Amino acid sequence: MARKKVVLVIVEGLSDDTALGLALSQVFDKDSIYVHIMRGDITTRTGVNSQNIVSKIGKEVTFYAKSQHYKPSDFKQIIHIVDTDGAYIPDDNIIEKEDCLDIQYEDDGIYTNNKARTAIRNQQKRENLYRLRSCGTIWKVPYRVYYMSCNLDHVLYDKQNSTDEEKENDAYAFAKKYKNKVEEFEEFICKSGFSVTGDYKESWEYIEKDLNSVNRYTNLCICIENELGNRMAGNEGED
Image 1 (cartoon, rainbow, N blue to C red):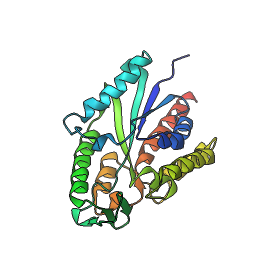
Image 2: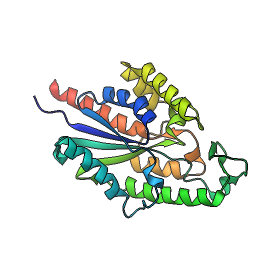
Image 3: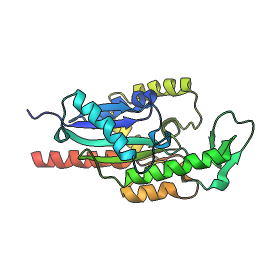
Image 4: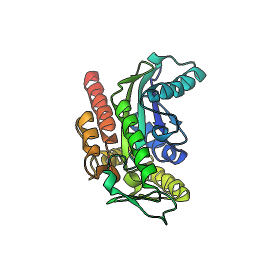
C-alpha cells in the first residue's frame, strides 16, 4: 500500500486547530493531515516582511519535515489559513477611539486607540499576504494561502471580537458539531453566503475591495472544492 501523502495545514492558534483539524482530516481522508500552529500571526510579526516571509515559513515546514524524516515528495500540499484582520480596508475606515483597550472589528471598519500603528500593521500584512498568495511552492511543495475574514471566529461562528475563552469554547463546539459529518462541513464552508468560490486569484482580489476584509468571507472553499474534484476524478478512474 502506498504511503499516505502529508497535507500540512498551517494555522495561527490552538483554537484554530481544535475547530478545523478534525474536519479537514475528514475532507482529506486519503491523506495524512498535520496541523502546524504558528502561535500568532506571522504576517504582522516584527521583522517579517515580503522579502523574508516565504523563507520563514519554509523554516517551519522543514523543521517539521526533518523531525518526521520527511522529504518534499512525501507532501501533497501546504494549506496556510490566515485571518485578514481588515487589512485591506481604506485608512479612512480605521477609526481612532481613546477608550479602545484592543483593536475592535466592526462591519464599518476597525476601531483602535492608535490609528497610525494599525495602518502600518495593515500595510505590512497586505504586503506579506501578496507575497504569499503569489508563491506557488514552499520547499518544492505546492502551497496556497486561504483567508478567514475578518478572522476565523467571524467565519465559523459569526463572532468578530471573541475572547480567548470564547474562542476555545466555540472551537470545541464546532468540532463536535461536524464530527463524522464531513458533507455538512463541506456544505457549510462551500455553500454559505460567506463562501468566495471560483478562481483563486480572483478570490483574493475580491477580499481587497472596499470593506470586504472586515466582513464575513472565506476562500477556503476553493481548497475544499479542489479536493472534492480530485476525489471524484479518482473515483471515476476506479470504475
